[in-house]
Image (cartoon, rainbow over all chains, first blue to last red; front, side):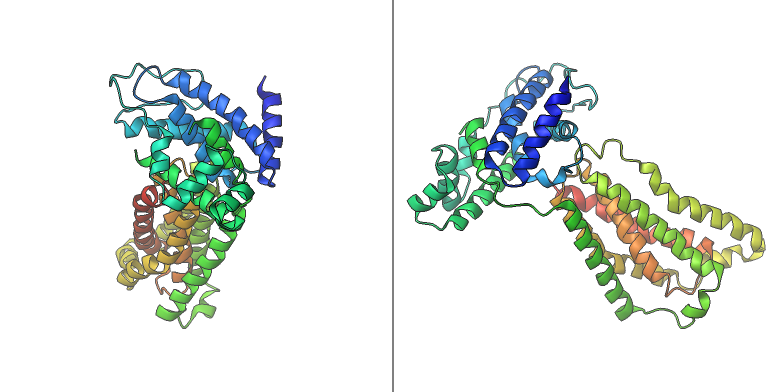
Length: 178
Length: 212
């Protein structure tokens, strides 16, 4: 069933690591769907926002994509990261959970804590240094290219790339603390 | 900023190629051997009869044990920094060094009269051993922790402990060339303690250093 999924995702990620942004966006979009289903199946209600987990997992995949070996299967790698981040998210909210690696469909027992405010990524953007924030916002929210952003903000393209990368790393770190 | 925005930002960030883990390991291992070697030569140096000692079994056996530990720790650690590969990491490999050492201790107990056991275990160099194995292994441990930070250890404390065993096995391999105590009884006692110290340090540091 997942054999085709696996092959296609591996091809996309290989192309992405070689520098193909379009394949990478496709890969991340499909992985987001898988992780969303996984997170929803694990989070019964309240406490942790599944979409937060999706974003954390995508950032971790991005920043740690070199930990995937091109000859190894992609899905176990993706789910291992998702599981790690999900447990981390529960732990930060003071709950103990066991998430079985081999049983992806299994659900977590009903959480007892009721609500924790869902943090939105807008807050994560606000936490960035001004230079990084304008670059990340231009490329993500406004959908500009690196070249356009460089022109608009009067920066060199490589400065934009550096700010973008550091900005994403800073958002990931911030997620991990909240 | 929703998930699609985030994906757009990450897709724009493909230009920067992260350092492959394989390269990171290679660099870290070379630097670790050089750093350990420099500290060893400056602080201790090989014992005067090291070349002659190469013909004695007990002297050689020390290297067999320490290198078996370092080798098994490295093979395991390579898996522990990759998500998905860590789940079924064969921890049993780590027993290679201790099992060899245990066999060596058994043979030593057979070969040496009971009256001499205690003297062999205490040796003459225990304090130097406890000081210099951690000292030689400190820089390698820092380097290996840096690789953990670059990787993605899902079990960071375990990965840190194994990094400490690798650093300890490496440091002990250098230290063994200096130490005049060759009895497996001495190695099993003092080397183990010194290496365990590095493993504990790694287990404490890694969850802080290699958070991801």
